[in-house]
Image 1 (cartoon, rainbow, N blue to C red):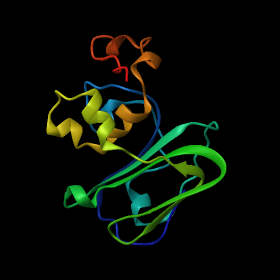
Image 2: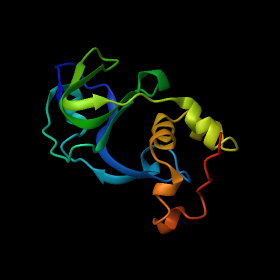
Image 3: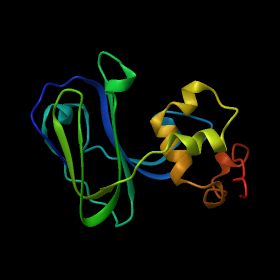
Length: 156
């Protein structure tokens, strides 16, 4: 992962390997997985981070703007795939490039359909939207903290 030189502009800048989803939380706490400590706040101003992970792993890269403005936050979820590239641009103008990672689009409708009774703080959170879209309840039943929170997917 590489970030071109720019000014810092973020309160938080992080990445996480996401292995599961906890729909009782939003923002970073909704993710079950490992925080990738190579991606930290100083990287938002430019630099390189080497992340080693297994093929097919889902990595979520996130930046929370400072001063906070929802539209200035940065979200780039990728799946590790050799030979692929994903890219995004921070609101500061710096470019973020991920090598051997393919971007995973986020569809807000998945969260709205699966968790219609949750409030705006959940349904507008792109971390939550990503988790709701890419992690199905049936794949998570083994995780004890989730048993009460999981709502079965509707059959179509």
